[in-house]
Length: 280
Image (cartoon, rainbow, N blue to C red; front, top):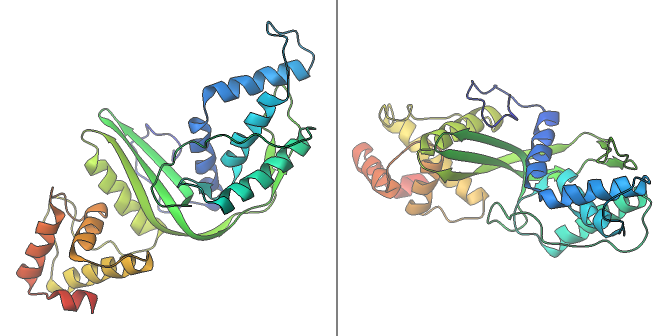
């Protein structure tokens, strides 16, 4: 259910590590260029001795596929602009794959799909995609810290080209998600996914009333929510300005206003809260 972008049913109250890991694998598989997968299949057929219309076969196709394959199975999935350390790690995994495929020599490096988020080196431990008639929303559950699971690579066969297994379970700590919205009329869906993620996967109490039913039930609830937002920004290495807090509250689904800062300023006036009370 989680991996079907067209499923509009209720989301679960938890996600297992295996499902989280598989979600990144499925998303990355869709992002790999189809030409790479086709070239990989062609190379496999030729290695198996099957007659091809194009008799040329070099290891180039397999080396190219190995690079994308390494990115796809590496967990947490690299979704931000890669650093040199990220690329070094990826190339080491490519070498492991090439050895398992019986190929010697250096790997081929090509531009990775994405980046899907702007944060350098950002990695996602969980990816959720949902589609509507007007567009789609992709939620990237970024990780604060994680241990990459050991991977065992098997030689490909014509029937099972992408053979591997995770030899050890993944371990990681999720943090704030990044939501990508494409198309019109998906903002409410994005807010729904944001609140679900915060409540069930981060374990954060989702304060505030449902979208469209008003703001907070009391001054205390409003202040607690604003302090949560300010603390979240500090943990991200960001300064908790009024604009930054307002934008984060909008991401959390607590306001649908076009100018969330105006809503934040209204709450401060309405509940008699000073900004020092929020950030002090």
